Image (cartoon, rainbow, N blue to C red; front, side):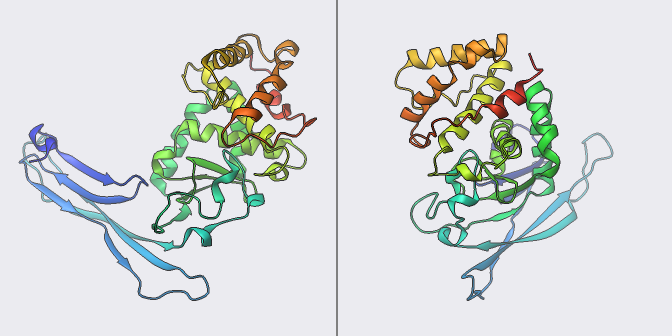
Length: 315
């Protein structure tokens, strides 16, 4: 007997894998009986010779049971909705997009061979489902109450696309070529993931040449990424969330603490000339120590404009 049965739970239970795909579902009735249902999985025997891909289809069913006496008795489960979704199964190399086509947190998410090693798993790339859009809007609304994040949202939200892509090697990414924010799976649609990718979208609109010029492996990539990390850290500090991106890779706790103090001073006093005068010192440390984004700093690139613009009027 499952733990939900022992506790007297009744309702619907959905089991998902780490990518957010539904594996199996159960309906637990008040009388202790359990009805199980599973998405039907069929892989077509046909392969597209031009694209070397096959199709995986899942059929999802939603069942409902009702009570008219406060839960004492229940009707038999009734099928109220069913739909089928199909996705392409591709090798990771066939899903790859050149470094110059993608950006965000990080630009490396479309590398050939990215992701887990071993045999190629089922990949997916699709526009967000209605339930995922609900989660996305909840994350957006939680950010919008912040002055700076709200300003970023008001400037970029209406033009953005949103997709799910299993080949990402990070939780999320901004694809500047298509003006799209991508998530690796449903569980990654969070306000933290969304915040940095929204700022990358804002950078792309703020800087005259966009940010594709500064994609992975190109001079200036480090500058663009650090600016986004600083914006993220300011938001988290302002809203009392203990989450830091700018200190990743810093060699000791003392340096990390000094960086956090700098961010907290910006939150308290605003981006004053004195505080922003220390920006390049921290950028240099980021360029030296960050395990992924180091080594591509462009001297003389004043990549603080989007940050200062987003923070203007918010202190």
